Amino acid sequence: MIVGFTNKIKAYNSTHAELQALHGCLKLAHDKGLAPLENDSDSTDIIQLLQHNISPAYTNIILKCRYLLKKLGNPVVRHNFREDNKVAHFLCKLGSKQQHLSSTTTILHSPPDTVKRVIQNDKNEASITRLVSSSICNTLAVLGNLSIIRTITNSDVMPP
Image (cartoon, rainbow, N blue to C red; front, top):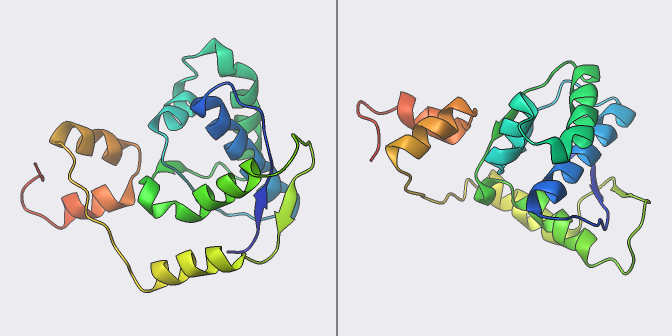
């Protein structure tokens, strides 16, 4: 972990919350000069909205995210399973426990102890098996999910 952040936000739904988190992440990366970077999201909706903007309700924040992505050299935003995104989810929960809505973002230059344990588990290659249908597998591969791409590449037959 190079840098992280928490912030209590007001979101209308999970898609709105995910978009705000992505925007915060991109803004932090831009402000700190963290490029090149990779961005993983467990939300297929977010990735599709960034690619196609099929929802007028999110136009403003999508345009802000696209602007920051361009400023950061157009890094790919790809899909990753929630289980592989535990640090982001921990920081989200930490922000939601803050007392008041705030425009102030808490920047974390080192991970809290609980995040250190998650990072250590990742280093120890703790893994989780997940079964997905062929159609979902294909969709996730198109959205850049590296776990799916490795599975497809390393097998002779598409998993069921």
